[in-house]
Length: 281
Image (cartoon, rainbow, N blue to C red):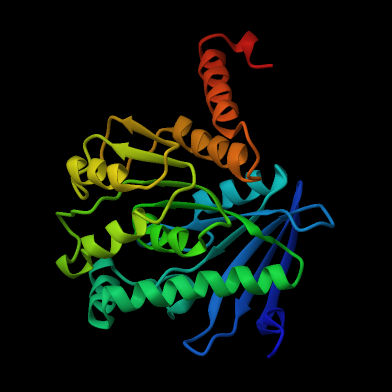
């Protein structure tokens, strides 16, 4: 059997403050998997974070760039790959109606299974090369990122340390193709996620109804799960929320006790600092 790391082709490397950003392509029988790795400046394999982008995004979306650099600077290895019919998997960006139809034509269950294998094999290849710790993995996915991130989190099993999901539920409306809705698949995945979870809800989400998001949160198997709600539409994100997501990941990514207390303490200090800058230190 060949070394999984031998299927990685490194495309580009760009040093940055506190981390190194490297592009790669993983060779798979089902097709190449384009990705990017943000690594801290360390010689040991650090805990791993998987970033799933949303619809019409890509592995180097603005949020991914911010989170990749910040989490790597905090000592974590961060991986992002392009979603189905997104980024470098296609010659040029597709309109939502186009890539949604392609996913439906292929079958949402089949696409989900393919993406899950893409992610698991990417982690395996990078871990075989000593670049990430495959035994400590966290997952981040919002909107479409949660659609494909939840099944990956479930498939990871015991190496999953924590997950941040949001802006997604078991029901959908509006502009999404009805063929994308797979409540049975998503519910089954949620019931297999027992690691700590932070779940974000936009209160006025017109794409994923609030009750469907609450229902999905309720079926998550984790006994350590937090739900945060923010007023606003699906596409809105308050600056404080991104900081909270990263705090939760940093607090739990290493799989040691006290993550919940650390997350809560950091959140309290951040909110106090906003009220009184003197408390920020």
